[in-house]
Structures are given as C-alpha cells and as structure tokens.
Image 1 (cartoon, one colour):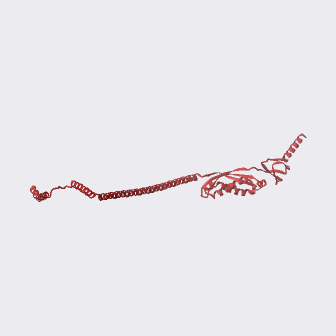
Image 2 (cartoon, rainbow, N blue to C red; image 1 turned 90 degrees about the horizontal axis):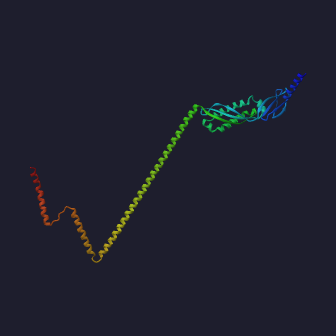
Image 3 (cartoon, one colour; image 1 turned 180 degrees about the vertical axis):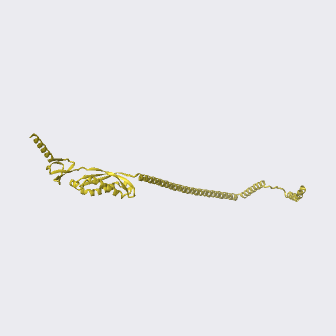
Amino acid sequence: MLTILTLFTIFALFIIWQMMIVVPMRELSVLERLGKFHKVLQPGFHFLIPFFDRIAYVHETREQVIDIPSQSCITNDNMQVLVDGLVYLKVMDARRASYGIGDYINASINLAQTTMRSEVGKLSLSKIFAERDSLNEKIVKEVDKASDPWGVKVLRYEIKNISPSDHVLATLEKQMEAERSKRADITLATAKKESQILLSEGQRQEAVNFSEGEKQKRINISVGKAKEIELLADATAEGSAMVAEAINTEGGTKAVQMQLIEQYIDEVQRVYRGANVSVLPESMANIKALFEGSGRLLAPFQKAKGEK
C-alpha cells in the first residue's frame, strides 16, 4: 500500500506539474491542443490540460542580432568583393513565426545574403563605400517585405566589412598612385603656368615703367633745353639791348669800333699761331717765292745726278 501511495503521489505531482506553466517576460509560447494550434501564451502563469496541451514553440520577443557570414559579390564594374553584415530582427507574431516558415533565422540570413548580392551588383566599387547607408536601407526594405508573412520584423541592416580581393586591391593601389601622380602633374603645370603669367606681367610692368621713365626723362631734358634756350635768348636779347643802349650814348660808337679792332687782332694772332705762315714784306715775299721756284726746277736734275 505504501508503494502504491507513493506512486500515486508522484503521478499526481507530475500531473500538477504538467498543468502549470510560467512564461518568462522575454518569451512567447505557442500552445497546441491535440496537435492543433490553440493560442499564444503571453508572459505569466498559465494552466494546461495534461496529455492534451503542449508547448510547441517558444520565441524570443527581444530584438535579435544575426551575424551574416561573409560572401563574395560582383560589383557593377566587375570587381569582386567580400561583404558581411549584421541583421536586426524581432518576432512580432509568434503564430506566423511558428507555422509560416520552418526556420525564420536561417531564412533571414539567406534572404539578406541574396538581397545584398543583388544590391551590390547594381553599384560600382567606389559607390559601395560612398553609399553604404543607402545600401543598408535598400536591404532592410527588401528583407522586411519578404519576412512579413513570417511574423518577423527586420529593424535594420548594417554592413560590417567590404573587403576587395587581393587582385582588386593591387589594381586600386595602382589606380590611386596614377591618380596621385596625375594630380601632382596638374598642380605642377598650374604652378608653372601661374609663374609664367606672373613673370610676363612683371616683365610687362617693367617695360611700361621703363618707357614711362624714359618718356619722363626726355620730357625733362626737352624742358631743360627749352629753358636753357629761353634763358640764353633772354640773356642775348638783354645783352643786345644793353649794347644798343650803350652805342646810342656819347662815345658808344668809338667804343664799339675799338672793341671790334681788339677782337680782330686777337683772332689774327690766334690764326697765325695755329698756321704755318710767315709774315714778310711784299718785296721779300717775292724774292722768297723766286728761290722756292728755282729749287723745284733743279730738284729733278740733282736727284738724277745722285743716282749716277
């Protein structure tokens, strides 16, 4: 009897245990009765019918982060890149998440990879890095649209890494080096052009300044010469006026004549000193001319005699 009572007690406790269930706050439980969906148990304490009811599925109601494995994608410009990311989703309908699809997590991963390959194929390699946010939004939109029948809400998608292949990296490095060399050549050419422009402008300004200076110099010389001529003319006119005035006075004519005689004498002396001229009386000059003529006539005969 003790053994039977013990077994009955254990059986009763087992039945009671099967009748009670506590659903945690972070979960939703799907209850099936006789193999059919009955209801979704919310967090809290619930009673079950033993042998009729069972918990078929338990779903996490918190936001879940799923790591999308790295995969190879081909860009619009035929560049191979490895892309991985993270998808954030949340179960919104436990019934559809249980019966709408077998494994919504695996399905979300595959759908995210497929969508990512499709969206990456529409962009060039340079635009993938520049339009990462836009790419994330497009992937979220497509995955969320497809996962709506599963009772799952895709909140956001984030690309973690975009890794080009080694060959692509080498090609990009060469391209960047060529681009840097091109920019350097353009900078040098622009600097040289500006230098030549500044140099030509300097030379032009120098020529303008020189011509302006030369012009001003000639003007100054012309003005100086004109002033000099004007002063000389004024002085000559003044002197002539004074001489005329002096001539009109008493004894002025004789003074002028005396001045002219003195100038004449001075000029004759100057001519005699500078010229090979002998001053003799007229008779002596005739005798001298006679002897000089005879000497010229006898000179050939004397020369012939000397040669013999």
